[in-house]
Length: 236
Image (tube, helix red, strand yellow):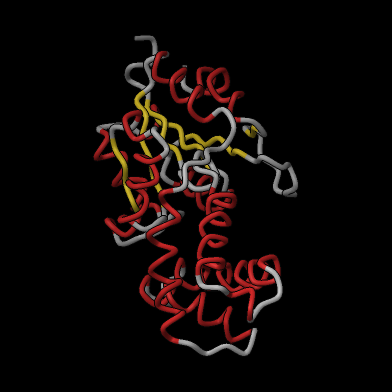
């Protein structure tokens, strides 16, 4: 195979797995199942508040300020509080229900499956490096039908460091028996995926579905279908 000694590491959420649409789908199911329309007039209002609370708490988790367990429930506790609701049973139900339902949703970023197939046929070794929770990321990959494409699937909590920390990239390279020079990281998060990989000596390709960032970077795509040709050039 032409690129049999080359390795491509993908981020999962928002790069291959459509996090926003899958998350919204799971939350809508929980919202309706728990009859929240009697307390919150629309799902859209609930969802908007949840997104704000979740984003802030994920940032706190990523910087080590709160635990995974705290994140799981606090994002819903804080959301309900905004609507003057304080029901711990409901918080537990949403916290557990979301972790169960969300990874079972199967929507992928456009062209994800065909691009993975193309890269494999070109001889590339494919892997995953994700900051997502271990117990849900493998479910996402299997339910979406793309698990079989990847040799190494590494979640940050297995290493004890989140991207962009250098150690998670080094650990992934070691597991894949890959060298930084022959490896490419692809992800949607400029700081975590692109800068993190570059600091570890790897090349990096930035996937931005909507080119709305001011950060200037040479290797950037807005559609996954652009990846095979560019990856071949970057790793030749």
